[in-house]
Image (cartoon, rainbow, N blue to C red):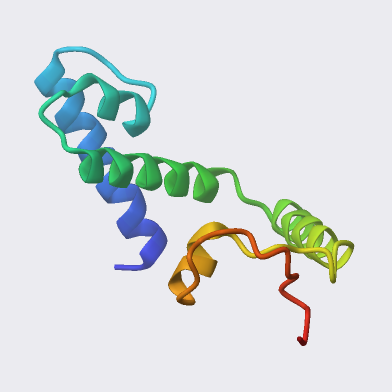
Length: 108
């Protein structure tokens, strides 16, 4: 089964199952994930991510994809040399997590 079809099938089956279990309709898996207290945070996050992916696939067009790519490239390249590492990245590099003030692009 192709990836898009698998995403659609999984989304639709889960949405149907959760709606039936709750005896109500949901706008999507994100809303359903908030309704069920039995779900843990990892399951809720996975349902939200699947809902986002499903919705992206449903609404994506070539112009939308090209605009998205262009927007990201423009945002990143217009700030070249000014970017700071995120705390998670500095922590994984063995630092204390404190902001050292160094740019990602610094060679020092």
